[in-house]
Image (cartoon, rainbow, N blue to C red; front, side, top):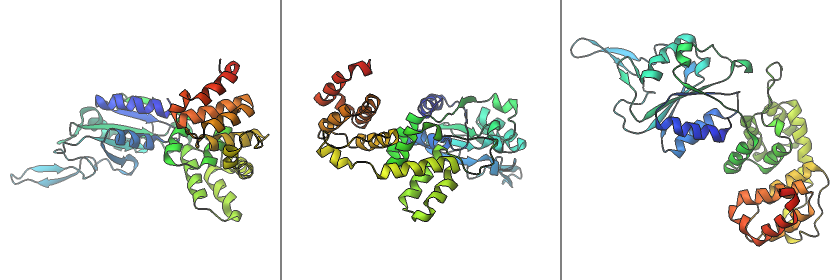
Length: 330
């Protein structure tokens, strides 16, 4: 399932307080999606790293009550039993925790209780972890625990990530490169000895590195240390194309006279940049320029325009372009 489907599935499961486990490779964005769903529902998010717990941590510590009996004090990271707010208890890296810690979660996940502690009614448990095949630190999940949850497989899908990246302000050249070379969105070889590899998380890091305007002599090494040697080599090569693109203002001012790049990499980059400028004032120029592009790139540009502003699909300029490209759109 892609991120968009995962979001829809989590909304359904949260509404019935059904525990769920998200399986996915490192860096695909499992924790970000859980945080997104919590924000969309206005819920409190308690992010607990299960791998850092000991088996007794969930039960808490005993104290002597006024009557002389032992009473267990639950840990502060669990929501207070009197808490009336709605929230998500997120057990991240649950299958990386030792088996005894996983066993301690049995009762909490299924019965919403552990010892004397009761999870408040408005709270839902979500867990996540990496897959065994990804060379991550994992312990085989006991069947008794696995049977207590719905299991969803999380995959990194380009269009979903691009939509998220636009909202988060990920740099245009990063988005355009991944549209051009989608295999690099997430490329992990468990048998490889490389310490860095491309993933949705590491491309976010690359965007932040570029925002910091690193010195030219260290830029490649920083990118290589973030996404690995192969992805870094292709991306830095792409950046040289990106820097030589026609100025977008020239395209808008003279769509019929501005040069059209010949390289596919440059066309991908230019379409990404122009799509972000789509508006009622610019759609005429963008449609004129799209008519001069190779058909597949004209479709890409106009699709990006409509994604940026859906009202543009009803414009006369869009209709004119669509009529000229009817054979491509059929």
